Length: 316
Image 1 (cartoon, helix red, strand yellow):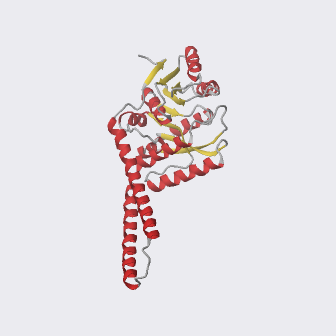
Image 2: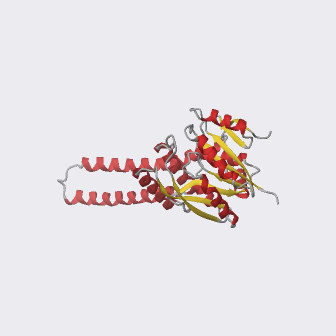
Image 3: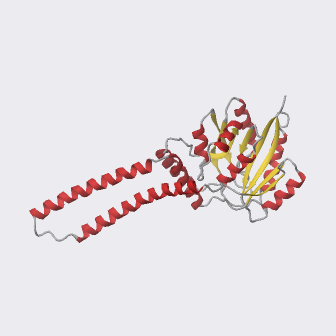
């Protein structure tokens, strides 16, 4: 019986403190699967500046089953995952996971067991995150509540980019889903097929610091909302109608007061407050429109999702 090809895709950005340990632990787990799977580890390097790439080149020199894909610039975590999907074309099963050991390699056999029950997507949900601060947990929960309110695609608040997908799901990503501002957690939910969740506990980082700054988290949140919902546009219409109705009623009240009491002062305070209020609402609505137009702008430019600088241990 021919073995299935399993490829583990791990995006990397400045992880020199932990990358070799992650490689050794993951290779040990994959070695235990050798009876049923042909395994390969694929690192996608998002233009590191700390020597991580040199470590991976050294490891790849001694391990021909280790593949390293280095990108020409920093394209981001989601694009690194997409690059891994694109270059793992012979994989029957593909597992995506971070290389900081917060996604435990020891969970890989359980993902495979769930896949063998007939699931095309096996995603993971954090039961606990030892590294997350109270503020980060709070902002994360707020983001997912907003996302689930604005979209029709339910995304678990503790879902991670640690998942297994089958070959046919990966092929859909290669040929059918090629957005520029990708939110993969939502996209894999949208794709459908049989899916199941597996819980895990995220350990503390074995080294280094988190690469997801607040600005990158906000950018990812914005991409998630803009990719899956036009509800903000519809909401802005109702906000506009609401304030237009309010201004109409205030106009009637002001006109009535003018005829009833001629001694009423000119009302500069009211005018200034209304101008500030309506100007603020208009700017918010324009900002929502601008965000969607910006998304269209990024799509129509049709630039590459990523550019590969070097491909190590790949066949021509």
